[in-house]
Amino acid sequence: MSSPALDALDRARTAVILTVSPLEEHGPHLPVGVDAIAARYFAETLGKRLAGARPDWSVLLAPTLHIGSFTFEAAGTVSVRQRVVRDTLVDYGGSLARAGFRYILIANGHGGPGHLTALEEAAAIVSRRHRVTMASFTGHLAWQFLRGRYLEKIEAALGRPLSDDERTAFAEDAHGGWWETSLMLLLRPDLVDDSYRTLPPARYSLADRVVPNYPLRNGGRGYVGHPALADPAFATAATDVLMAETMELVEGLLDGSIRPDERRSPFFPFFRTGFWPVALGATAGLALGAVTYLTLAAFGRGSTRRGPSRGWGPAGRGVPTIDPDGRGGDHRA
Image (cartoon, rainbow, N blue to C red; front, top):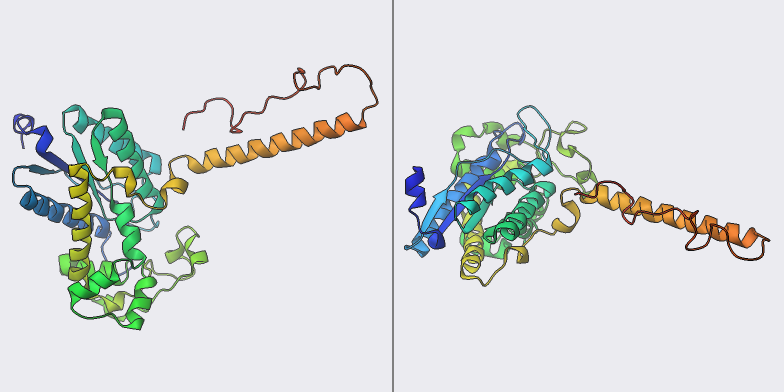
């Protein structure tokens, strides 16, 4: 669209969908563009459903941004720092907001905790700074999906119950496994290597999963789960459920009954940009303060000097000043 055509749109009845996902390895059987392909499909499907539900609205699909953080490093993976992901979307959303667009939605296909949090942070910053509504529901939806909260609805859409073995396999799925291989068989079967049929399950404990690049360590082949179970019918059922859940959230957002921050991922409190440096700095500051206090207390108990304190009392110049967050200097995030 041209700039004049965009400028002619009714901002109060226009939704802009941003597609954001990195290029990342997904095992020997899937392309590095899995997340971006999935995100684009979700964006296009959301756009069609939203346009059908609100025929008097305009829905714009922005070009895909191939950026993302918290990725598994291998040939083909392009990893961007979490702060850069956040700031890119802050700038992107800010530009749209300054042009008058009031509703900005983020479509994403990547599940890295820090990546999901960066999208949520950016949405919150743009919404607050420009008094618009920018939202990323993908962290909430991904968590609910991978935790099995939608399995009963998926079974209904599939037309059959999942076996106990299938439910166990789903719980072990995370990256390039049953779900993502099924999705690629549905969307781009030409990009799926037939070797998926014979790939063995790749199971990892919770302790394993906190190790960086864990699917590629100790002989791992870059996937997590059961790709051999892949079935496009499963992907069809799962995407129908996910899109229905997404539409419910988006409709609530546009109606004003749901705020963006009401449907965040559980990672948000712990994976915010700069959270761990600040937290570790604060912990170090508290530890230093405790050591200083105990040292001064011990000094006071051991002193036989009588009379007023000279420099070591609460207001004495000898008491070190402890920065509350332990960082000192520039306090910017």
